[in-house]
Image (cartoon, rainbow, N blue to C red):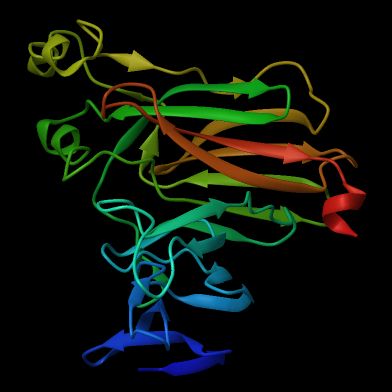
Length: 278
């Protein structure tokens, strides 16, 4: 056990297992009965606080304990259902949680992707941009396997598909925001490639390869971004944009356009909000 915080007759326990102290979880312990309720998965907490009986707000750095993946930071409020004697009804869930959108400063660097010992690790997964476009409030991207070889194609599918690792940076002198998509190309494949043979069974268009997404401008300027350009840079794809004065914060939303074969994500920007930002 890492830490025990009393709250009336109850306790909030931060617990680690074995010799791994990098990741811990939170449990609520009822002093009246000894009932223990797990509130979180194994995480790296940046803060947590008790709000009320059985109610805790916590934040994490987004590191996944099950896979070496650095995700978005989290802000969650979790509440125990029931009391020291048990849940509200047999078979009912023990907790309910509310996840808040985490808004980041675009001037601060961000890395999302594979990680080893907290350090970015650019995996052997190869991807290709399927679509990239301007939205009213940001940018959207979707991805397919790299079709240059069977090895690169199959690297897309270990366990589950996911977006490529990426990083963001900002140059305060020029106002340029840069997104780098690692191991990601704009074009791949060749006419007559055998990779086209089974694509329909996998949910892709027939004769997908060769496929190319054009380098250059992503279209007209938006409320938050101007001069958006996409290009290849070695093994990576890079997107640059000029941030407008309205681009105060941004977040990342991930999804999948197919069953599990076209991962996608959005960068969503917003203006300064007095209620959120003080």
